[in-house]
Amino acid sequence: MKHIVLLILLPILSFSQSNLDEVETLFKQKQFKKAETVIQKYLEKAPDNLEAIELLGDAYGHQKKWNDAIDEYEKLVEAKPETANYHYKYGGVLGMKALENKFKAIGFIGDVKNAFIKAAELDKSHINARWALVELYIQLPGIIGGSKSKSLKYADELENLSKVDGYLAKGYVYEYDDEPELAEKYYKMAIKEGGSLTCFDKLTKFYETKKQPQKAIATIEEAHKKHQRNALHYQIGKVAAEYNLELEKGEKCLQIYLDNYSAEDGVPKAWAHYRLAQIYTHKSDKEIALKHINKAIAELPKIKPFKEQKERILKI
Image (cartoon, rainbow, N blue to C red; front, side, top):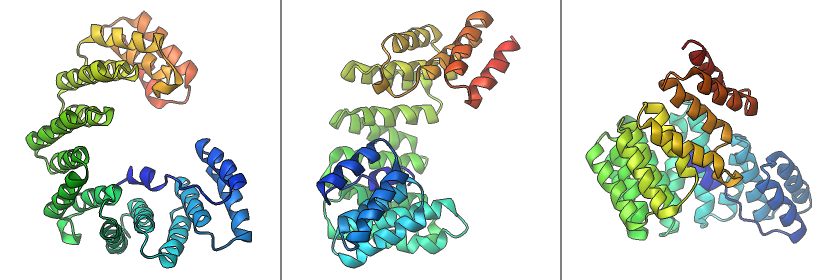
């Protein structure tokens, strides 16, 4: 459920060109508080502008101001009850509020479910609403409405819209329900059908969860053959370091990652140095391990795992 909010908050920008440019820039820069202020000022002049109301809800959502976001999306649902995406966003922020207070969550579940169902009914091709229902039904306990069969029903609907999404959804359901053979089967089907980095990542994480690092590394290598992404070198090094496995390969991949690093790779160089420090700790090479962990700490001094790793190294 948590990652649904990232999809919910993709902004639909179309209210006025000057405001659009400013808000779009602020969203890209993740300056959501400033965007909130800009939108509020616009709404003082045009309080019924639905695009601006939606953007304000998005800005609140990015800041985890769930109650405020709920209020804005509720206005949209009331203004245009036949717009599927408004129901989807409303259900999404209700769900996020429920996740933050599990004692009160039961009071929100019915509204969350109804909002997602309404979005799916209004838009027969709404993939995100169906994904939300897949996750919701499999995660809920049966006593408050959870249902594997209903989760699979929406996974079937996803498959009719997009085979890749359908296979990934079924893999997710079977993984959550502790049926690893079926989960692996559908994740592999998703790779065969689509072959995106997302598909490879799902199978890789599945293998890591199941403590099968050799299969995880093999999957990442397969992904690299297809996509040639430097970030995948880091992923191989990470698995090698975490599982004390294929250390030479992990070391080589991490060095390639550092040599070819760019901001687009996502994971900061400090984490690659941390993984190298782990590898050299496994090798009992205190000097080189210290060199890498010191580089990691110099770049990101507040990361707790870095400091803990240095303590381990000093005990060698």
